[in-house]
Image (tube, rainbow, N blue to C red; front, side):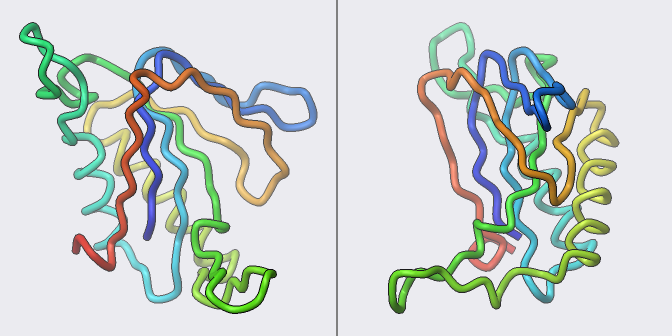
Length: 149
């Protein structure tokens, strides 16, 4: 699994001009599911994101998690995180999970985040989505389970 995690003051996702997910202060997570990923990776990544200390404390240090600040998490499925651009000019997506498995793990990941007591919102799996955000900082982290797990 791969995730691009952005600290935001607000974020929303729309499908066909309908807002399907919206949060205030918290994290926008763009989530990609790869071949071979399973529940263990999803649970580990959800906990890592919920406890990642990237919010400022009273000393202006990144020392608080989204849980600590009572923030929210917006999760958007993004298989293009597995785009391989190493050959040619058109990305290949052979390392992305098939849609059925990816959707199952995406839903499981959402449940895991909510299980940490974090209010969650989400996009619509496999839909063409518009993502709107105000990046706070900006602070953006890339988490790759191949390098973390």
